[in-house]
Image 1 (tube, rainbow, N blue to C red):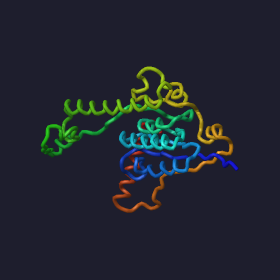
Image 2: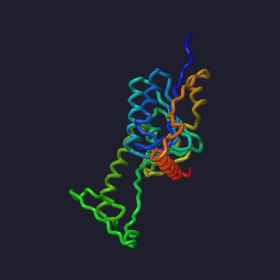
Image 3: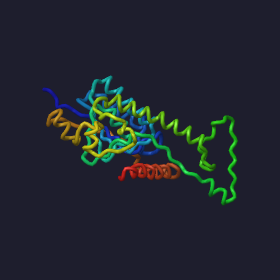
Image 4: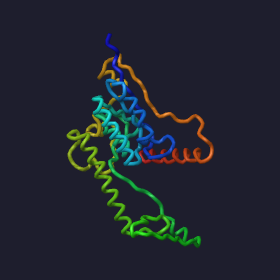
Length: 257
């Protein structure tokens, strides 16, 4: 007897970073993705709820998804929950189709760098910053020194190159589905149906009904998600976990969530 089709569901939740308890990285999701594709399911569905983060980790995860999909010849569907913005949208665009809720936030195809300046405070407190380097470009954007135009120009060049990489990835994945013009790549965000109208998503729909419509009412779901430790170790690990959670909340807050 022919068995019911199975869809492997991989949950990609949280900010994207190379390290940090609970964050998304290529290393943290590699085994989940490998297992999801291993038994030749009818499709792999990605539940995405991420405000973005590291461009490198976003690219690595996206590349792994594409490699497995092409090697196994398995279609990939992305289902956006609250947000798939910046690096989160990079992950979504690795899928063959993107589905979203009416109120989902998508896009933010841009690159950001933020920091602080504390040189005035240090001067008032009587501190003197001393930095010695071998190499003219070794020290850049030191927060304890006044900002200078050369550093800003170099940073803008770096951000511009990362932005071009992001744009190239989205264009290669979404192709003719995207509306014409560069307005999609300004870092703007799009909500639900407006994202569909601009080609950033393929439709409004949720995982179970869309998969049942595609593979029949008897489709089965096998879920894969990151496991978090029940009791984090005391000391630095607990502190790191708290900092990571604060940073992640700040990332979500950028999109009003």
